[in-house]
Length: 335
Image 1 (cartoon, rainbow, N blue to C red):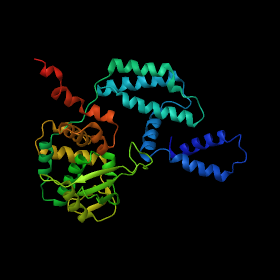
Image 2: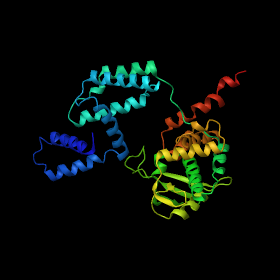
Image 3: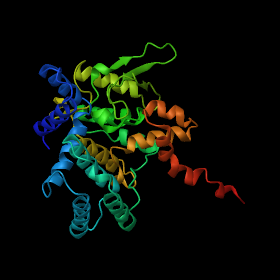
Image 4: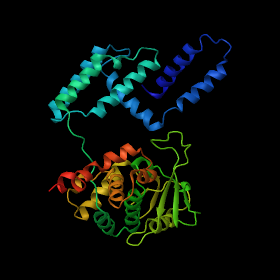
């Protein structure tokens, strides 16, 4: 469902709901349409569109629960036959969310809630379910090694890569937050007990409206100084636009932020240069996951960590589970 069709679908809802309110003007309906479109971010809207388009290539809306269930089974069979690996639960749930919203937007009952669909998904997960592939957790030593390997003839790109690694780690950023971060959101801290920078987060995954005023702190340091690296980079890019930008071979800095694939390539390249074990398992989530783990190892509480990462404490618990299995397991101290 493209943007135009989505607008029409929303319009159908407005017309249906306001059918009993004849006094509502066309102007008010138009205003309401505009506000309703803001309910989801552009990236979320894009994801829904892509997943729905995938379904609608083979099916039509409205779709019967049996049709949806069979489609999911066929998708799984095709994936196994061509790539020898199953779809993960999160992928299937993303399909179902798009299908559900498409039905509701067009005035139909949600067919994905049917036991035919839910039991099909559960059956596939029991048969093909695999443990979630977790991003590699980096040690502080490995972070230092990656930063120190940012040395080449392109000094501007080296500096950009250092900023990507160090800020991504110390800020506990989601990669989407870091890549979309703008210079205007970075301010020197006025708090007398903290020397460094504050990054005022706008809209985030857990704050879609951007009204919570969440901040991340970027301190100075001894072995590596995040704030000093940030200052050096800001001197090069100025006081406007995106922070993490593309850098050409000649050192010229682009105005656009780098994309996810480019960020992943940088992290894996620097990890490989630093001869990090299993460098190919480093992902854009590794920096955030590593910050949580290293902060926990240094004695910080889950609540304190969550303040910097802007995530639920329950999510922090999941991040440190692997560490706790080996470091704080009571079985290791039983005898």
